[in-house]
Amino acid sequence: MILAEELSGAYGERRVVESLSFSVERGEIYGVIGPNGSGKTTLIRLLSRYMPPRSGAVVMDGRRLGEYTLNALARKVAVVPQETVVEFSFTAYDIAAMGRTPYVNRLRFEDREDARVVEESMRATDTWELRGRFFNTLSGGEAQRVVIARCLAQKCEVMMLDEPTAHLDLKYQSGIFSLLRRLRDTGGITIVATTHDLNLASLYCDRLLLLNGGRKEVEGAPREVITAERIEKVYGAECMVFFDESRGIPVVYPKVQKPEGKEEKR
Amino acid sequence: MRRTPTRSMIPPLLLLILLAALTVLSLCIGPVDIGAGAGAGKPWRGFHVADPRRVAEMLVRSRPADGSDTREVILFELRLPRVITGILVGGCLATAGAIFQGLLRNPLADPFILGVSSGAALGVTLGTLLSLPLVLGPSAVPLLAAAGALAAMNLVYHLSKVGVRLSIYNLIISGVIVNAVGSALIMFLVSLMTRELHGALFWLMGRLDTTTIGMNRALGIVAAAVFAGVMWYSRDLNALVLGEEDAFHLGVNVEWVKRFMFFAASVLTGCAVAGGGIVGFVGLIVPHGARALVGPDHRFVFPAAALMGAALLVAADIGARTLVSPAEIPVGVITALLGGPFFLVLLKRKSRWM
Image (cartoon, rainbow over all chains, first blue to last red; front, top):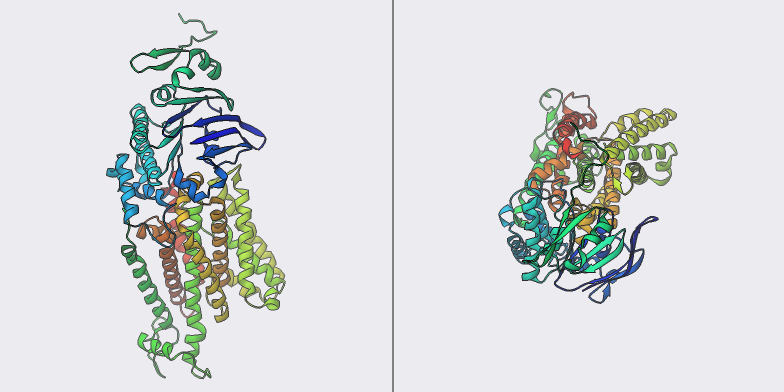
């Protein structure tokens, strides 16, 4: 579905992603993990064409990203940013309906078919009840689900999410990923998500790409990628990795660090 | 909720009726009773309100050939061009304000606050000093204003850019500075002039009585063309309100739409300044009113704002002509008196937006 070939991205002279090659299969949940500054956000920007690559290419369904028109790409790929801030009083419905932008003719307004798609998308993300609320009054988890509804309204084949759970508490974190898995299972949507929560990645992703300083450290199933040795090397933090036999996935704990050079008070 | 176009037609229709009523009132009101025959009644506080039916009749009969009838001359040469200028200036300013607020994602943006009006006025003053309107004809005035507006907009934009992001603080501060420097330069240039001095100074405060029919025609054509373009991209601006990255992923050609919208807002500001000088705060207040009426969707905000801005300016002009009649207040004074407090309330209430 998506093929990255020797992909590099840079801001000015600063290279953030360095000759990455990997592929994402149709219908899988592909997780991108790595410490802060390892190039996760940049990778999403490269994969979604927001940022032109310095070298290399992204191929989607046999065509380079640059060969798609912006509109055609918007019908195929939808992106959920870390956070969506809206200054004006758009309702949740308005925001979800913006997903129809690539489909609606400029001289027409949204018709019944568009309204049907928007309703369907909002129901699929459990946001239909929120439709009349102002978007900027929604909680982080609600807002994130509305944005996912917007992506569904785009009728996308691939959904890319940049740290979708970064600002959410535990309940919403797993809620978002469960929702993504459900969308994959029912709609066949391919999902590429970055996260720095290793356990969520391990729990929900089919395959993981571990980035280290913009380069590929390793790619594979969670059990192959997440090992104590590798996490320590990439993250520079000591940790313990257990294996959850019931689910067949690894679980990461940070090691509790003893304060150094401090004497105990008496 | 999904809005049906038919239901959304109602607020603009009401605004249109309001604008029409204010236009008729503006045509009827003044120190001369243009409706009555000779020996009209006494003026009330220095002005008459003519019978609208008589005025309508005169309008339908269209222009007099000889100009022997003073009342017709007043209607066709003074009041009609003036009210049309008011409609154009108000509509342009409100639309420009709505564009700036949407584009900058900031409810405090306005052509006046951003210094764009000042730039336009400076452009016209500079051109006047070089006698360009005399050489190139009166249509040079809107061109000079648009050029000045674009230059000021570019300056403010680049001053407030921090890396790739646009800082809202910097934007407002740069606007204030460009405004101040622009005004100072205008004063300097005006002091170099001799004969135009008085007119130029008064024009800067925002006046609607200095334009001509030819100017109105030029402004109307440019404004209508630009407004059509603005409507064409209004949907894209909705997506831009979510942020540039989001808009890109919705298939919007972000750079192009941004450029066009900045250009359109600057040209509309130029038109407004060419027509009526610096009339502040219309572009600030009106978009808020429009959004309160039709919601934040720019496909509805722009028409509503244009009509509301036109109505506001025609109303302010009626006030400017009648409050101290037979003398006149520059209409910019009225809008500033309305808009200044509004800005402060907004700043206080919405400070979390900064």
